[in-house]
Image (tube, rainbow, N blue to C red; front, top):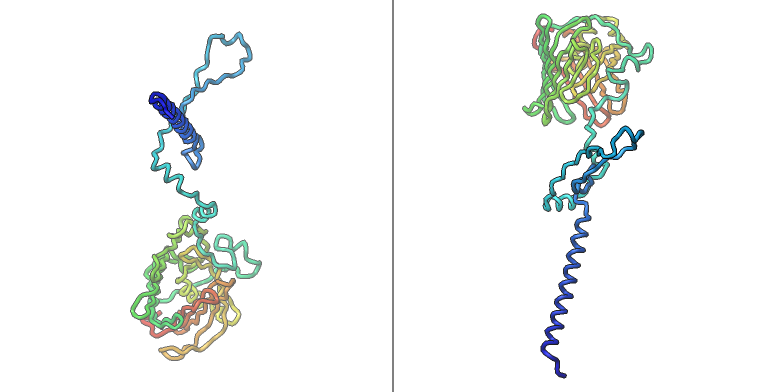
Length: 352
């Protein structure tokens, strides 16, 4: 069949025209779809796609009071948001929103551990039952300057330790250090003065291997205890001690009170640690007990601080009457799974 060349060229032209119209329609629809997307995900409080002139019209109580040809000024036009880069849009769309519970966990800072049992120093007096663990005013007799050397045990590990007590005038420094295999594991230092209650700490620092130093500051003028590693503050209670000064304070109280050396007698004090941990420590006298040391047998007076909760500190101290009732032996254990820490007297340098 014969087809005219002009007819073929007309058909091709019409086909090209239809294809062009379809292409233009597809591009228009695609652009319209993209323009409807919200590129600001997650959604902003007040997205601004374009500037809009807004005129506020309010009802007029008296038409005569406002001329009919007066127009109110337009409201302030919000600024046009700058265009968002395509790369930034891709990053936002690809990112997943964080889980709400994860945000809560990140927002809450870990709280320092407070020993269970009685309330911390801030409310200890209010929580004490009448007649139980009431903290009285004690007389004290401070020891002379001395260095006590100990055998240190921590589970199956054994090493050496020193308790150095220095006082001059109205100031003191107390340092406890322990080493195992030549490596220092613990250094605790208490510095301060004296008041009517005995030892009055001003600053206590606690350093342990693989940990940074933390401190408790006894701000006596402000009447509070603050901490280097916590924003928590506690009221400064009369006679409050730190985690190393309690040993010398206990010795000074027992030296001044013979009646407290009988079984069942108790010595009670507030004790604060450098990690914002605080509690009332009540030492109950368990009577006399002979302990074997490198210096020979020592007839000591034993005191026990019982735990008040599953992870509370158990403390025992055997006080040597021949050395101003400073500890000839002491043990500390925090919870049933703790191996414990023990000091056993080896030598005394000085005349406490």
